Amino acid sequence: MSSHDDTAGFPTGFVWGTATASYQIEGAVTAGGRRPSIWDTFSHKPGTIHNGDTGDVADDHYHRYREDVGLLADLGVTHYRFSLAWPRLQPDGKGAINADGLDFYTRLVDELLAHDIQPWVTLYHWDLPQALEDAGGWPERDTAERFADYAALTHDKLHDRIQHWTTLNEPWCSAFLGYAAGAHAPGRTEPAAALAAAHHLLLGHGLAVEVMREQDRDSRLGITVNLSPVDPATEDPADVDAARRVDAVSNRVFLDPLLRGRYPDDLRADVAAISDLGFVQPGDEAVIAAPLDFLGVNYYFRAVVRANPGEPVPDPHARAWVGSADVEPVRTGLPTTAMGWEIDPSGLHDVLTRVHRDYGPVPIYVTENGAAFDDEVADDGRIHDEDRISFLDSHFRATLRAIDDGADVRGFFVWSLLDNFEWAYGYDKRFGLVHVDYATQTRTPKDSARWFAAVTRRNGLAAEVAVLD
Ligand code: IFM
Image (cartoon, rainbow, N blue to C red; front, side, top):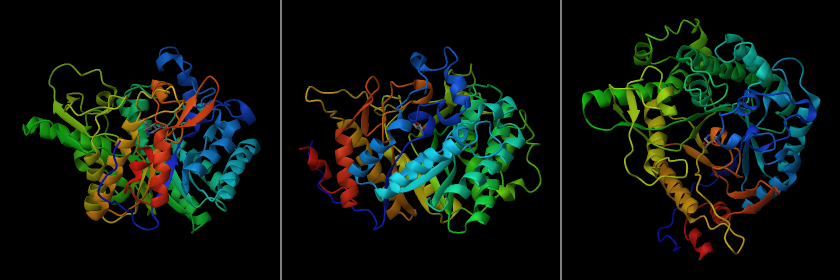
């Protein structure tokens, strides 16, 4: 691989990190009083997960966290984004904090700090305590109240050592893949319930921000949303309107209430036949719009769509576009990752500048971006993942272009530190900078890990690829 000729440096103080999530890496699902989450239940249902995989063992990070923090230190990252498992900290979703669960995260945070790595915590990366789903789950308003209680209990115990707190990761996936498409836990296919779930996730976020802000004014509080630009396949007005609707139910359904304090009027009209949004009570939108210290943006692909008056397509994303059953995704012919997602770094530039342009100046962190490829362990024992290096390189450059164009992007977290449990795709899809041999739990940094370490060291891209020459 050749080196790049242009030099591309990031702003001083740019935050470099990697990201993971509890259910995807921890394993140890019954240790220390942890009780089932919706993902334990879902993954144990036959036919839900590729290959019948579950998160029972995953990367066994619960027992190997010291080794994993060592890997982070080797990468030279200054920040590590991970999520707390609600069912470890509050096994049934309510009541006192579980001391053993807290002890695990306290040890992890202390280990990170001992290596000068700042912990960035996500309170909810999809592992709702099963007891709360049994009581109705996110479509129930009470779940928002339970989430705020959990946030308050946890923040109270850990805010002295953790400054950056993200309430939710990708509420779109929780609400629409979980309750409309049925592709994620809890596997329900109820479009009206998905809309209620989206609202209660946002309400839980707002209530949590309120209480954490009262507990400590120095905490930096945010939320992470997954954004995609949504383009029409053609200029045909039907396709243009399809793109508008998908944008509303994918991006603006979260960005507008969070950053403008109200749901979009066109979204309300689009879903009127499914729900009158009667669950939105007076004052809710103001709670949701509580000031944020930062917005986390996750980006993986651009959506291109067209109107399809025929039969709905069997695509989980399409099923999740509530109110748009007559819309289908279109492939543009770009190369894809192992997930089948088209590689389009300009989409990252576009979502970052869109947030800046349409929602005013807000500090942004790219809290996830990365790619699964069919990695192979070579005869020399290494993983020569040039495709991942090239993917990351192009997305880092797109971020720099967005910064040049005015977006206030302050950091970038690569998804993911480790190969891990990729939800409905199981262990086949490998996103890690570090390869995991699931039979032995051996960790092997891929070439991309060495390349990324050089990027973080220089805070820039110039000649980094040369480390692989
Ligand atoms: O693995 C997921 C992660 O949990 C949330 N964002 C997307 C990643 C890749 O699919």
